[in-house]
Length: 224
Image (cartoon, rainbow, N blue to C red):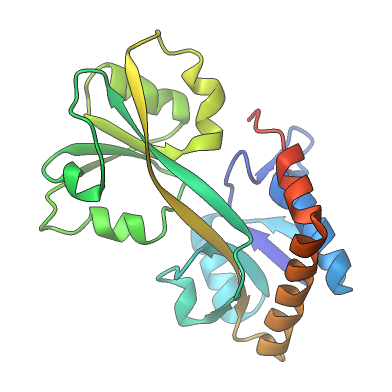
């Protein structure tokens, strides 16, 4: 069984030895063991992962709820695997943001390697009038914000913990925006795809009820 993922540090990444690492690796080990399934974890560029899931060469992945591309040819799990906090980071002189509508007409930085679920589509709505800029790294995104190349940065909370320590105190304000739930997706091209999805959901529920899921996530190190 192949569980394919695109880089999503610090939750999933390839370490210096070329091995998959991060909280999702630990969680996947526990999940597949609980489900009684053998698996291997592979890292792919997003476009290749998309094609492999569509063809069934990769049977399982994870993505934000109602992922617009995966949902067309993969079955979404019924239980969230992760719930990720999204923040808005703004220059101290930029107006506060209370909700998505407050970003109308403003410029926003996103991290190029990340997907943001339905939020990405919402930000591209012409009626909202948001100007989007992509940054390659968390550090470069913060530098863009500090130098006023955009007014706001939207990013997941955990990966920003260490980069934010390098920012001069009082220069950037952090405000909560929303949460994104991440689900398993099983390729419809997989034999007995629905049964496999349900088997993994049942295993995930047992991990949650036993407290093991919470222990894994609480023990995760987000140093990357």
